[in-house]
Image 1 (cartoon, rainbow, N blue to C red):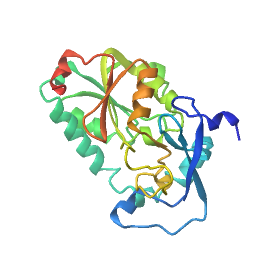
Image 2: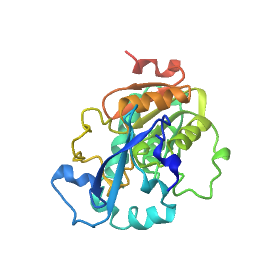
Image 3: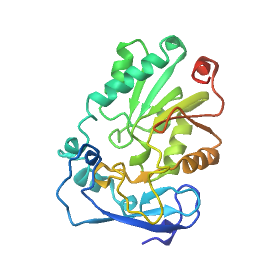
Length: 250
């Protein structure tokens, strides 16, 4: 194991072994559904400073292994909303948030999967594009262009290289743009010397990066972006809130 993996992927400070869970632990546990134990241990490490939690060994998996073990035909069993319901709901959220700013927006849905969110926004009159680095392997990110609104729903918790993610988002973001993203914050959910029972810590769903508020703030600051939250699961990144989005800040 690369010894550098013992340092926090967010702030580079030391980490400690927090707990071990079975690979079959999934987000459906919040609904009372538990998969049969696989017998495969997944170890989560936690940063001593920013409280970022991550599945260290899974960070080393190849894309092929993720496709085989996680994003396979059975994935819908542990995330039944990902194909239709979630992208439709997220498109509705964006449409409502910016219903009076459509002409000002050039939108990218980063990690857009099947592209449904972007498709729905286009139908509603938005200039929107979808890009997913996991599936759009034939697309060079340097040729995609720049956008003043980037969404990244259900992306941050799935990413092994959080610094690469931030580099990609900054590459695609116009200077006067903003990023809206979702991930649940772990504050008061992950407590030292207590077991990892929170449903969101779910290796079967590919949830390998679990952020505290401090870790998100640190990551954002390291990339010269301001970080804020609408709630525990919906967040914003930007250098400065653009005028067309000023209605978001009250």
